Image 1: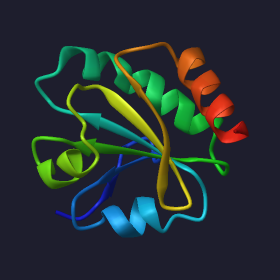
Image 2: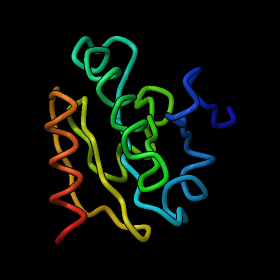
Image 3: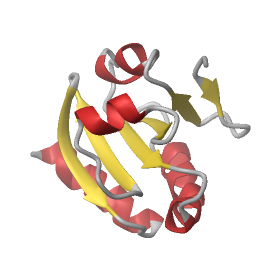
Image 4: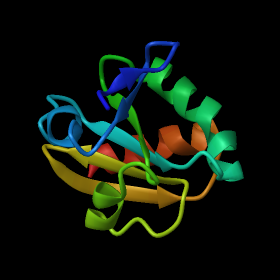
Amino acid sequence: MESRIDNNNVVTHVTNQRWDAEVLKSDVPVLVDFWAEWCGPCRMVGPAVEQVAKIMAGKLKVTKLNVDENQEIAMRYNVQSIPSLLLFKGGKEIARTIGAAQKETYLKFIENSLKS
């Protein structure tokens, strides 16, 4: 399955095959939303993640990874609960936050993580 852009063109869906190109080799920091179809809190987080993508456009890439379809990546990064949002910079995970939150909480998490 190829990576696809959400209908609002701000969130990229990544897969095992596209992980390195989309996340690890990105020129800008990448926020990855680890989620699954059956996860209620994941669906609640979706709109907040899309808003973050719009607000941070050009400074941050926002992606979603379905853990059911891409278990290899979820296991590699020891993602045990979803929603989990991992922030990558220069091909390395620099921070993570677990559980549903508001857009403002995610923006503060990103800002603080990129500062350090």
